Image (cartoon, rainbow, N blue to C red; front, side):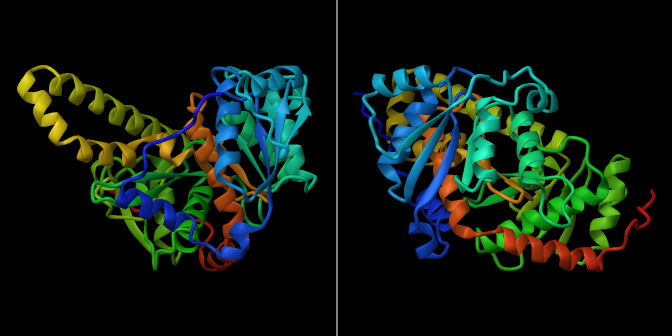
Length: 376
């Protein structure tokens, strides 16, 4: 049987992840049922099953873990890693959503897909949350259609936690759910992102910035200009526009973006972090003297790698739904899947949705429908 382990978190990273888990203790320890889309992965179910086994070994609050997918294949994977945990229940599905499938077509034409069956479990009340590392469009579409959005929310948004250079984190919202939003939907992203910061990350008076190509309020395309005007008049704690170099400086707690821009920011940042570490490794191992220096700096490198490693975060909550959906990367490692399931447990425990409903109603009552954007 494979041994699943990971290096312990650094003190700073551990403090951050403890903050994520700082909700009501009784809620955190209550039994939780989670559905895992066990076919939704770039490499098939193997890494998903390995991550599920890790999560079951670490999170006793998971009382039932539903695995949706092809039963014989999933049983073979469980047997391969010698996992016979009684909390696992396989829910058979006959179809798989491929990464090239469109979201809406996948939901309409593949009604017996693993992701649809996983969301159905949440809709039916059997599961408290669904985790999917499969086709993001399909997961978002299935969740939106089957679970519906909260009152006042037209489209959900993915909230991605990203590190700053000072050791903190900011929330990127939207990181890929809605690539073509209206200005009103971008304002709603800000409302939800700020509520996430306040009630989950426990930050007092968090502020949001709008992703743009310049800090001046007249910078940006038509969508950005209209969204800026709406945010400025919303009553939210709005900082103004932020550029790429601002966000990692930690000037705001929430970076608001359309899903297209946000997804590019997320994936480019993760790719850059990986490239930088590969570049550092190549240079540090190029001479004997540098190797000695690298050994002395190894704890520092590990600390930075932990904070910038997407696997540590695992999954991203899809905010604005009448239910909980956690989105993970299609190429997630078993460790990342374990952390996506951890994120599901934490999101269940924090009971964010009542706060989202309250905040959306509050700011919708304040905001004008269509304020005039600033002109150059």
